[in-house]
Length: 422
Image (cartoon, rainbow, N blue to C red; front, side):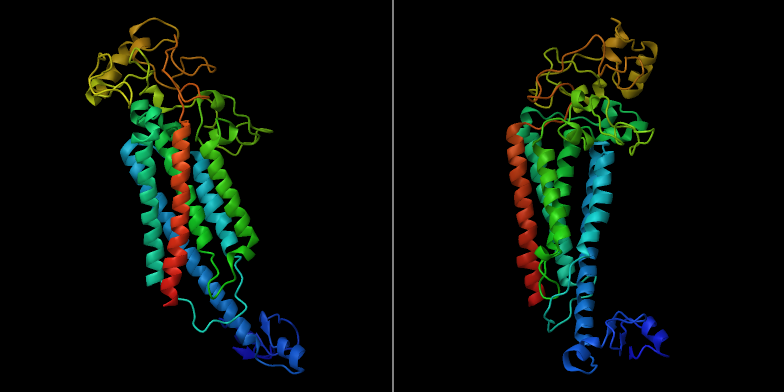
């Protein structure tokens, strides 16, 4: 709609795009005006139409980019959550959820929409099809790259360099109480998948800000570039750092000692009675070593029923077994431990077979049964139940994550943008 902004002001405001014939830079009823022609040529003109089209095409391209990003976001996160819940009854930790739902889905996307239009008007308009070729290829390719990366990372964890420290468990076997759901991330599987998720979503958001013909190059969007590089540094820090407040906040490369010593104001340490946490940060780290460990006596802290036929450790030989428990099923264990309750510090059948985390019997300063039991060798620098990565696995995982990022950039730059050009 074009008008002078007088009696047609209602139409200008209602129209999808309104241009006011005015000498002012903008009108109360329209963000675009004909002032540019007046300033350059001495008379008003409709040269603002070109700027309007460029802004509109940039907006459409950005909208499609955010749509594709949220499709990748939903498909990768939802599929991985379903997989880990089904496989091990695990879930992401509190701050892993906050990072994805707030850091990526809100903050990073708010930077994605800061992309500016290209100075030169392109000959064609961007695609507006939600199921077009470029949209479908982008979403499915990112999903494929995610699961290929996750699959390779998990294979390296269980059968590659991670075999020296990896221990398998489920939160059912670990007997983690339902109300402590955020501690269901205290294992190697969730830590590895989250790092892959973080890498894929960071790189996907960044490549979807590539300039091409309708938007300026992504390097001119300094907010997006800053967030991207900070996110990459966070990913590397979580992968390589030894247990500390930051790694235990995200429950990656964390152990019992560092978890108990967490002291982050407003998060793990209330300030004036205020804390931004559901209260499950700090305290004991409920790692898989409670069930599966490398102890010399082949007994860990928690004894699973005989029906599971678990070896003492993931890396144990096939002919190595645990001491036979006095119960074969979970129901039998519940009944047995009801009759032989665990007593902290006592030498009894309950102490031998029935300890479970957060049972209220042990002192708050103790993480594990009393008398204490040796869980066997750990990753250097870590103590007690943990999900610390070994050095060789850190190297391998870093290489895999780097190749994942390269694949996403190549997929979009050479593949999707190449399709849109043809």
